[in-house]
Image (cartoon, rainbow, N blue to C red; front, side):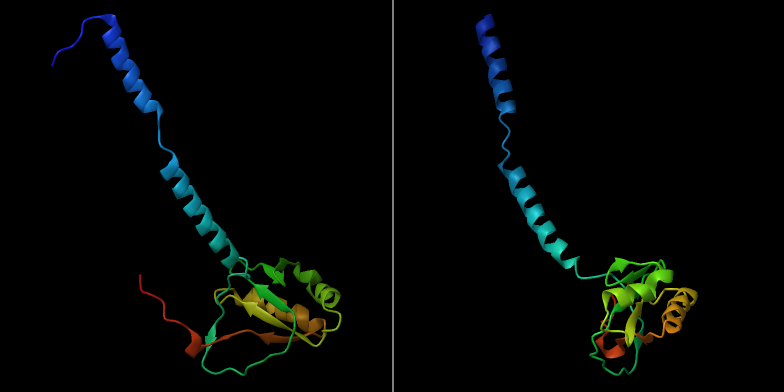
Length: 149
């Protein structure tokens, strides 16, 4: 290995090294960002389809195809009417306001870990307003077994 001792040769060597470092290829970065964007766009659509509530399962169930409002009670005890939060004291009024032709009843969909007290409060509020309550349950044969952790 022979090195040139003149300043021009040493200076040129530094320039080449810094020139290589400044030329970063961003095409793989753009590819990864586009793939992540596509994944986000696909999963965002799947997350729009309602509240995540795991209803209790039962052995037999009558099927009901009545078109009635759905009241959802989450694990945390939050109450939603048609996926919009609602105060329990205004629940019956909101049902009558949003569904003027449907005053016969409402579906109540509660997470299986919801406390009984909160569910009873919702049922009582609807019963006092003369709104029939139908509880939403999942048939046992439709339940997929969960993977053990």
